[in-house]
Image (cartoon, rainbow, N blue to C red; front, side, top):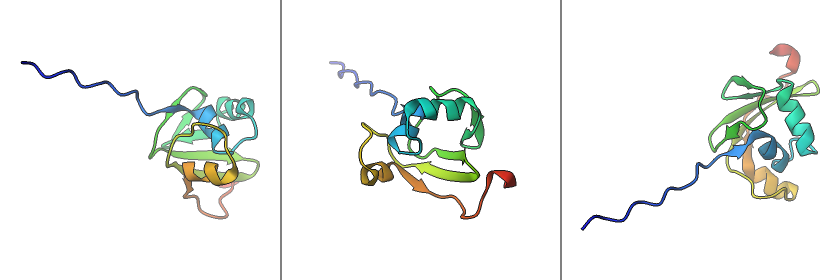
Amino acid sequence: MASPAEPVLPDPRQRLDKWLWFARVMKSRTGAAKLVEDGHVRVNTVRVENPAKGVRGGDVLTIALDRQVRVLKVMGLGARRGPFEEARLLYEDVGSPGVTEDSL
């Protein structure tokens, strides 16, 4: 007798703009989408201009914000935009202090 088929699990990805909003990098999802569309976000060193780009655990995001560059490692995907303590669990800050947009 044949074994039952393994259930297909959904791809563990989340839209980049949604993740940035859930992680409280941006105040609004619209602002997060604009940041991506303007080319200020890189995923694993590749510039992304599509807010629907999927991110997953382990991806490294380089985000240029108002004279500051943040380098964040995605540690998890969000289910909602919660308080800061909950949002902080979604990433690990791996950036070097003192890195600015001018040094890129």
